[in-house]
Image (cartoon, rainbow, N blue to C red; front, side, top):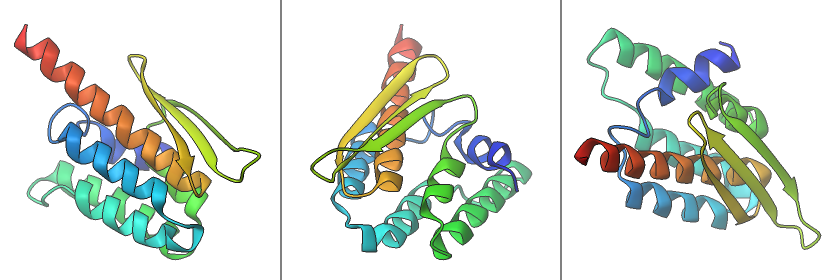
Amino acid sequence: MSREETGDAWSDRFGREAASPDRLNELAQWCERLGPHEQRDGFRRVLQEIAPPATSEEAERKNAALEWISLLSDSGAFESAAVAMIPRNAIFTGGRLKDGSFVAQVILDGDIGAHSRTAQSLPMAWIAALLRAFARQAVEARTTASH
């Protein structure tokens, strides 16, 4: 399964519908606190939180993408798993600071972006930034819908 198929498959509606911004922000903070040896746990929890109920063909496609991401994570390919979760039309960057912490930024389509500044690994920084971007997207979608 390609990066395009994974990131877009599960994230198409994630920020706009089912997401609780508070839950996403809490999950992002939790991911940032994980040590490098706990990344597998981070992916497991994030994937459990975002897995859609398998009740339609679209849900089955999303679950197949999540299974691929899970396989990458379970094999220790954490950077690949994180990149696979990022939608292909998103912009992302990340790096390590002098103090050993990691930073990342993810900007979703529509210029909705967020960052992570205190993660203990680059993959968890990307995931935290992605979750925060989805939280912002959910807030903006609800604000737009109410007007």
